[in-house]
Image (cartoon, rainbow, N blue to C red; front, side, top):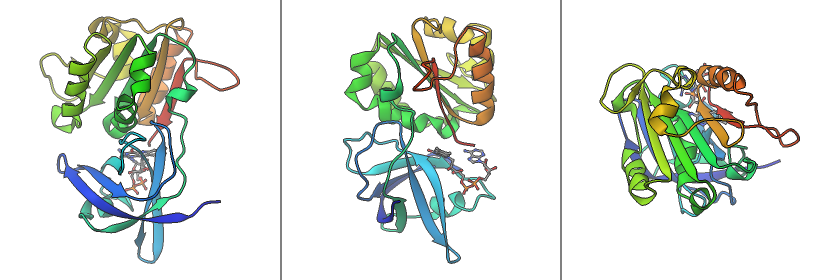
Length: 247
Ligand SMILES: Cc1cc2nc3c(=O)[nH]c(=O)nc-3n(C[C@H](O)[C@H](O)[C@H](O)COP(=O)(O)OP(=O)(O)OC[C@H]3O[C@@H](n4cnc5c(N)ncnc54)[C@H](O)[C@@H]3O)c2cc1C
């Protein structure tokens, strides 16, 4: 059981025509970086709710969510129209297993995102835990175009703060840009180009791979990693891959 908490938008950032972040003031309970909240609006007398990963760290005062408009979607066009001071609903529990608590002992953490799937990794990277625990932290961020890459200032400051430990691999599928890999995550793992760019190998001995975003990327990456003897992680059956499927 749970209940809806009243929330209010306290900040809004528009990254492009389709991409938005909202900061929300609501009294949610403690959570772990990488988890998601449920956000709802009352639309035509119906409460429409969807899950969204927290971009904020557990220490920050406001919830932050990052999303794109799905033109025919019931919630996102309305969510994007909210302004500072507007009310919304937030479910009073936070869920999800894409957290560091679920990652078994390993040396290298790979965090792979498509599109808005970058959100939970920003939250994780805002915590000390990730920097205290892994020898290498690799962020793989795949979008169609560079204009769709959000949170670049935060990522650049993490590169400054955690130089040799933090490796950033941006990937573009629909345009070419210097120093960014062209293609898609599964293909670039399969042909070895992602690891060549990162200077770190993905293997069952040393690596844990988090996958977040679209289901095609997640399914294809699991297949590619399966060829290396890597499997989904389960609490009762430790593995090497964790995921959060957005759509
Ligand atoms: C655990 C979890 C966490 C999530 N966290 C986020 C998040 O942090 N940010 C975020 O943007 N979305 C996230 N999502 C997706 C989100 O809950 C909504 O589905 C999405 O925002 C669209 O909402 P909607 O009501 O407008 O359309 P929906 O009715 O939810 O979806 C309409 C159609 O669009 C597809 N769709 C949903 N999301 C996308 C997308 N990003 N790109 C292309 N097609 C899509 C759906 O599969 C469906 O076919 C998450 C989903 C899950 C299950």
